[in-house]
Image (tube, rainbow, N blue to C red):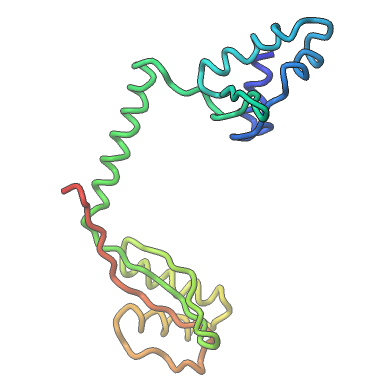
Length: 177
């Protein structure tokens, strides 16, 4: 029964924060005619591994708090620690860099939308042109608008298209340095 409940939690049948079946419901479903003490034993390993929490009181019961067992031994934390160290190292490599922001604007309503960031200026320009064409702009206008935004050239006449684009430089600095 413990394995079945654990598999149902992992599969998303029970979501985090959701109340699990009562001891009586488990007893009826799995152990008809037995005591609820047998059903209580089914929840014990799930409580011990941190997937289920018991709450007392009128609205109490057994509740899902994690879809996977929570590590408790130093060896389990060592694996997580290694993953965290790799993540910190990867983040350190992207700090103190320049990124290029892209934002589109509807020339009729003035609404801005579609903000994204790119590692290179050329990448931001190519993305801008591709997205303008996906929005229905003609290739000539899309290329002009993207180039103008990239190289600080005069923007094409607004009457040529429904959308414009802005490309701007964005610095990402590390606060840990």
